[in-house]
Image (cartoon, rainbow, N blue to C red):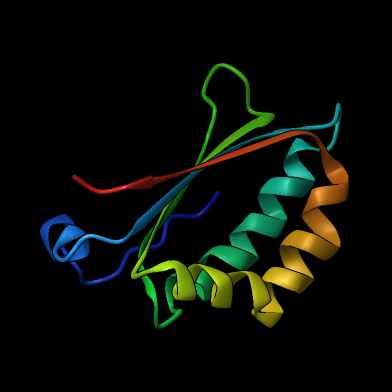
Length: 111
């Protein structure tokens, strides 16, 4: 997967708190590279969203079918807007989710 970055520091991203969403995916057999390609197209668009403070996706070193998402949103409304965005509906809901064997998500508040 390609790497994308913004000019924000980690300190800037976590300042003021927010809603942290951590997700773990596992692709179906033989679908991991296709999922990675979809995420390469999706990630820069997600990182540009107004309410996104930090958005990272990693791929498992030992198991490349596993993906870890670390998403920090300004608030619940920003998270909802993310899920309603055209790029989420196209790339994630429309293309990536059908290729997954497993998807887990948890939400956290920053301390």
